[in-house]
Figure 1 (cartoon, one colour):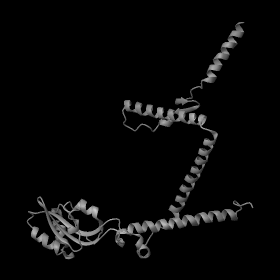
Figure 2 (figure 1 turned 30 degrees about the vertical axis):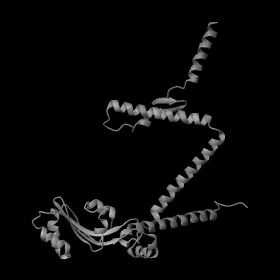
Figure 3 (figure 1 turned 180 degrees about the vertical axis):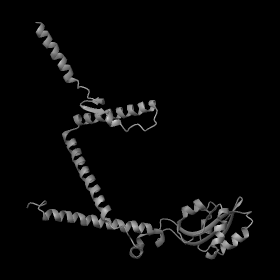
Figure 4 (figure 1 turned 45 degrees about the vertical axis):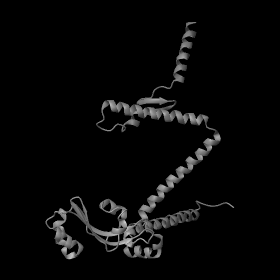
Length: 282
């Protein structure tokens, strides 16, 4: 009788341990048969984090991990076989797309010629310039923002409106006295940048000032803006070559990449057919 009771207790103890999974070494949480280990959170807490904040970070991470595990298990139990089959097909295709995209990008990065010379850029621009219309107004100008009581104001004004490259030393000397300036009028800029740099120009007086060859002297409090508009290109006109040069380069490089990808896909298929790794059964 004693032996029978002992055997019964042993069975009960074994059954309890059977239904409750034993905690694995270094594990910090469990959901069903899934365990979260110390190594999973080894880099979670940034150096210098206080103990209280560290505890909050770890607790939030564990709770999110548990929620995800419980949700995926519930989804696997309750979603129909048809729906799970559809999602598994999507997951499989996503893996294929992800791997092939990463592989092709690596091949392209190591193979494509990234050097685009000036002649190639100009030739592409000449053939396709009608496809590159301006989205807004483009302006070439130079300007100076200077205090109106500057003792050399008259000289600065005269040299600005009668600009000469031989005055470079003069401009280098006095540039530090200007609150803002831009003397390179060979660069095209968007009108929105003009509004930002020159608050004395706005949509209300835009038509009066933003005109090719326009010279303007505008006072604003204690400052004077000296402005010379060199050229203007309005919206929906062909963009100037220098302005879209970076875009042209990107377009040409993308074109090369697409051609390289097409060639690579053809070569890998041809090689597979040649090596009897790919065949179509009729």
